[in-house]
Picture (spheres, rainbow, N blue to C red):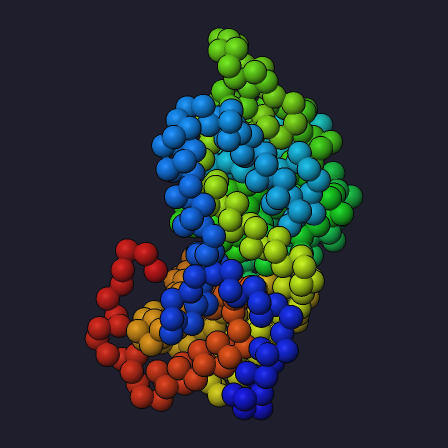
Length: 427
Ligand SMILES: *Cc1c(COP(=O)(O)O)cnc(C)c1O
């Protein structure tokens, strides 16, 4: 295989026209769409229109005339199409961290009512830290214990005592992909509620919340949904639970009639009760443009085609690393069924500097620090070089060229240069 073969694969790729939907900087190979999705071409114009027309001219009237008030549900309905949820089941609101709080609190309320003797919440030590921080404070406040496992196999043994199983479908470090339907079914067999974080799966892999009969889900707007930095997040509640309990951040936007301005809280019906404060209209408008890029893919095979290309891209990446970069270890599962839309690598030393040297060459991936083995039975995890692929705009030739650059960075010992060793505030 040579570079021409890879270029030919791009020419034959049915998703190729979708790259035009993005404003990508010339000469950059962007492999970090799993951390911050690229800018859709439509976004700048749409945001300008919201600001100058809807806000500038329409002023406060736009809450009604532009239906700003319905935007969290309207864009939620679009997100629903990407995650196997029905209309009226998803809202866009707040950040993932806050949404984790809201849905986990509701899950604990259900568990406290249906199975009060169950006092533990189970998650993975390798889960994204904010999920664990939020879960840990909520568990502390409610008298639950947060139990963290080191491998998916350990979950099974805890299910008879667990109230809630809270997992991220695709692991942010390794890209490990859970089988949501199977894990949810096992949880339900043992009377455990399943809360799923879709931050690294929404827009990247086909998700079927309804088919899996999951209980709650949250997800991020700025990763594969291309909503922009700090984009609002989304949440989903299974319709069988949605009207059972209030969520704890019971702000006026989740009230049944916010403009009654009554002193007592009465939750809205359905998932709208999971709103809290006034929605960020500019941010949600930008998110809508990002979600639209994924819905545009429906004409080219949709998420099934995205998934197929994503796996082909990460497989190509893994094959090239295996044959050309013997010093690197592939930390992502090689089994397609267990791999999300990224390839993670580790190396004996210099992971951070290697990523910096690649960035100087125009290849943007990122670095995630490993954890030091703690006193407990848990093993430490290595520093990771992380490369996300976004089939809407990542080409096969991008993967080929990125590996070429990585080979050069290593062969020339380029990464040892001092300028690559200073860490920024954000890695
Ligand atoms: C990116 C990510 C988050 C981010 O949460 P914010 O509240 O947006 O900062 C949370 N959880 C997971 C699993 C993520 O991947």
